[in-house]
Amino acid sequence: MIEHGFARTSVITRLRHGPLGAHLDTLVTTLHQHRYAPDSLRRTLRACDQFGRWLAQHGYAIAEVDEALVERYLRTLPPPRVGRWPKAAAGLPHLLRLWHQQDLLPPRTSPPAQTDAPQWLGRYAQYLEHVGGAAPSTRTAYLRIVTRFLTALFGAGRVQWRTVSAQALTDFVRQEGVTKHGGGRKLPSSALRSLLRFLVFSGEVTPGLAAAVPTPRQWTHATLPTRVTVEEVERALATCTGGRPTALRNYAILLLLARLGVRAHEVAALCLEDINWYEGQVRLHPGTPPHERVLPLVQEVGEAGAAYLQHGRPPTTSRHLFLSCRAPFHPLIDATASSRIAARALGRAGIAAHSRLGAHTFRHTAASQMVNHGARFKDVADVLGHRSLQTTGIYAKLDVEALAAVALPWMGDAL
Image 1 (cartoon, one colour):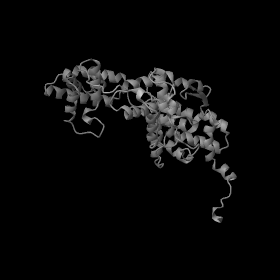
Image 2: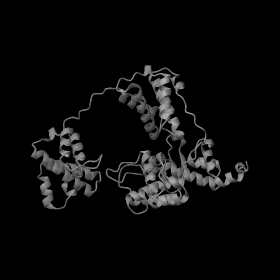
Image 3: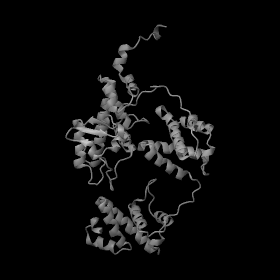
Image 4: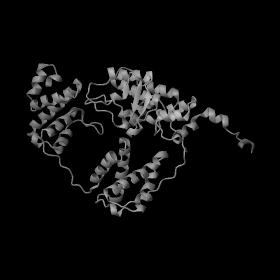
């Protein structure tokens, strides 16, 4: 009902008797059910009413509204910032979506497909999820690389797997390695091997071609983990203080990263039933169910989580712990959301910009602090969820005091 957005009778009467009056009631009722704020409802009503009067002025019916007509209308409005709708059209996409759901608009026209790559990518994505059991972040990374591989090999033509050669695989991996550093240099090779396993599974290629995918050379522990100091972590946490829902959510996420050293996708996968308040435990899902682990829910993290649940988390049927702070309040199931929150907090804290600052920065810092305070590598590995102590061994290079005790004298000045 329009009354959800406005209280003045004159405004309600004007909107309801406008060209789109009957549609506005349905639209606002739908948005109100998704808990859109009153300000958003008012902006949407004004924008849709203005659009309806423009349609009536130019003699257009709703059935004539297509993408070209919407573009023509938007050109009559003050230009927005790049990538955004004009302010006077805010909320108009909600109306267009409603009309599409009601089959009031002509069907969207899509350009003719010039390649069958999208179909193959869709089948490969299903294979990764249901057969390979890959985590969402892994699926996203592999699909991005495989998409570039298909474009490089077949362009806009048909995908012909029988023509894929060992040389083509080698050339692509080498080209991808030019722009990647550290552990990311192995990602293209892993993605292509996964793709080839899928093709063998589908009967498109014969086994053995995966052996032709080269593995870029990478020195073990050649780089240091990206970390910050304890003081910088506290400064980043201080940027998320306050009683606003966004601050409460981000503070709880950052504490999970900083105090427990969890991964970004583990934060995204947390559900309400994963927190055992009575025993003070939190259950984490690294992506492979058999390797779930349970960590102690320290008081500071628990208090932040409870504050978010009581005062910041909107009412919803979703079982995911962390939600967006804007309607319709979708779960933050994308691991990049936690990394963006971490990177922004570090940036607001005045920490020097670094291309790799993000959620893992807090994880590396937490691990480094455990090592520097004398924790055994087995204990650190258990907390971080490492399957091999070799993975945890990189943090030995960050124990400066222990390294200084065994360092040999430098004789360079005496030569």
